[in-house]
Image 1 (cartoon, rainbow over the protein chains, first blue to last red):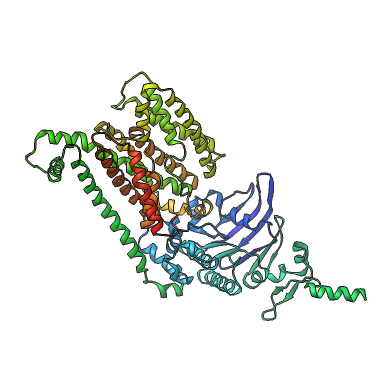
Image 2 (image 1 turned 120 degrees about the vertical axis):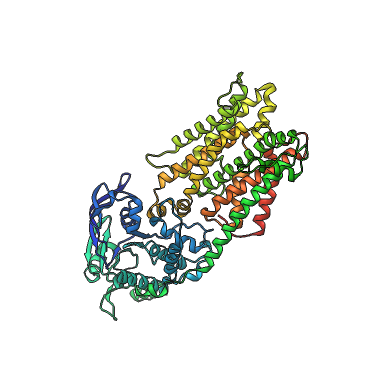
Length: 275
Length: 359
């Protein structure tokens, strides 16, 4: 079991400051959602957690250890990532890509043995991607690739998983399928899961805790009901009057409120006003 | 966890089958390499029966004693003239095939070949300077031309590397651009030197197109350690190189020290290329065509692509050299011409036959 602790990190690309004093934590068996508008720093937090970029202030603890002091291969045994729409080598088969998840567990002089093949194959069965095993990844759809990446992260056998927009570009059925899968894995294996999510409704339904980021700062954090409030949504997204209560479970639900809506409707309003 | 235990024990037989096929390919190509090497030693201006050739070769193996029943001249032709040439061709082919596959993987670029980052132009400039020097001294049995070619290849790659470095990282695009730019600069200096080289022009141009006509055991002894060590290092890094095909960020997230991997593979691939070209000239086409042909037939997985490229490269260049010295005997055709004439149509055939994504 691993706990992720992000403590007061400040981070920037060259001169632009992207994260300012961000603090939150993810407990084992808990799914935490990172939400916020485009360009607020969600992906940067994911990249900082995997040491692609380092914060200039603050620290990130994994299992109580500062990630700056963990060798890369060991870090990859503790923390797995599902990147957002990554480049995949199109000539490799799906199985070969999933098997790459075993890399952190093998030394330079080791090749994948039957154990590695078994783990990768089971991960593919778990994510219902085993029928794709022999296909080249260049031929797969966005949803299939997303499942494949989850199979790869399962193959990595880490206790913490980061997901960058796992449901982007998926239809509503696939969104639910993928998030159900992630939630079940989180529960069964007591994983610490951090997911950057664009869709506030999905975040509200699936996450135990939410961290709302705005312009590199934590604007609010807590349970979905505490974070997705009309006031927070108005302040961060500038969208008015769109938070409702989900009829099935009472969690906050977000519906767009476009003022007068369609052009035909707006025309009627304008005609009425003229009269 | 319960769901996992239900599924355990079901390995994927399809992948084992596919891997088995590739392992058979490695064994098959190894056998083919030995056969081709024996054949190439038997064929030449003096015809020696294949059986005699094999007897002579086998008699030199330790623990085996065969009473010589052949004239000593035959033994000299086989062991002192043909065998070093065949072995050198095999080593150079293996080196260029492996280096090509490594560069393609490292740069994630199907157009990369061993000469992409200035090795060839550096070696050419070194060789041309070696030709133009009035000295003929030897070091370790190597003439001044190969020594200067080797030094030129390493120096030019080091310059490209230094130019392309940004802080602690080595962005691949900058590396390629610096390589192309320095290559163009060195190439134009080489052209100028050739034009002003007078009666040495023929020798220089022949060197630049590549030839094994001067091969001897001393060359083999100098090239062998570089090629064997370099290829061994590259083969060790086959699995990390696979992961590098994702992209650098994903490779890091899967536990790869990307900058160290790039440095190690770059040094290994550059050393084997430099060692290969410094004795026989800049033979084109092998480094780009062999890895792609292997990829088309056996797939893109570097754990198999690299050893298969070693073997295919060696076989291809031994055969190309065989053609180069026999097709127009007694005069020789530059081997670069043969590799292009044989390689390009074969490659185009493969490309047309399998219209699928290969890289």
